Amino acid sequence: MITSSPNRPGVASALRFLTELVAWVATPWALWDVSWVLSVLSVVVLIGLPTVFATPGDKPHVMVPVPGHVTIALVVLQVVAAVVSSWIAWHPVAAGVVTALAVASVVAEQPRWRWLAR
Image 1 (tube, rainbow, N blue to C red):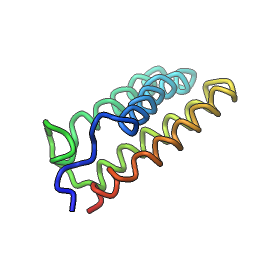
Image 2 (image 1 turned 120 degrees about the horizontal axis):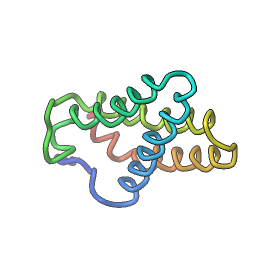
Image 3 (image 1 turned 60 degrees about the horizontal axis):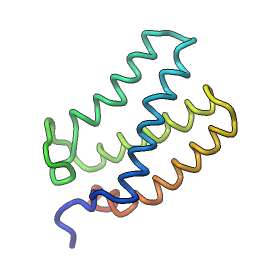
Image 4 (image 1 turned 90 degrees about the vertical axis):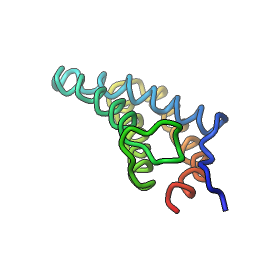
């Protein structure tokens, strides 16, 4: 049984980071025409929540410990934000690339998610 998270530098971490980065850029971009306040708030939420809330053992420093399913939900939030926002804000080709990145990220995350769901 794995006692520490399989959240190590590697392909899964890189794909997750790229997906998060897209979410941080595409979401405020997509929301800007709706409200600049929502645009700024989206960045605060997408960066702030995973910074504050984490599962012990998954990250070296945890500010507010939460169960693994909360961490999984935060990752899913980032993935959904990246995909939906890219389709709203960007050219369909770019959005298609983001969607493929998100799928690859979710597939690569499965060992970590199994560990978090334990």
